[in-house]
Image 1 (cartoon, rainbow, N blue to C red):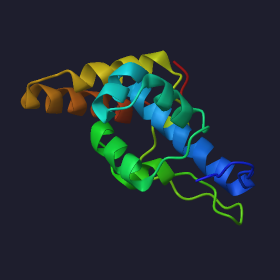
Image 2: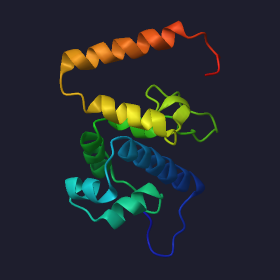
Image 3: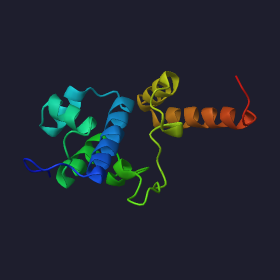
Image 4: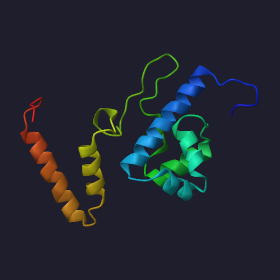
Length: 142
């Protein structure tokens, strides 16, 4: 944590910013507002804003509670974080393909998929999407 009068190190700022981006992306993907997430954690929505913009440092306890609330492992938040040498950690679970949470169609598809209550229907839909995507030649424009 930063004390009064102390400046955050460049690496601290980078980590806080990265964690905030991952937090925001996952929250948006799940269709949660900042207020909803804040209520789950027992904090204000302004605190969620500070976490998302990297202005507040996430404690290990808070990061653990966020992971549970967002249905991810704690290492999700660190995926893609450059290490101190400038290398990037491999992303095992991308937020969305290519890390972009801006594609409205993908976001709508993921949200809709998550709302399918019947396990058999959800599996069938997944198999349908996989079969359609596998039948398309790679790199073809649609």
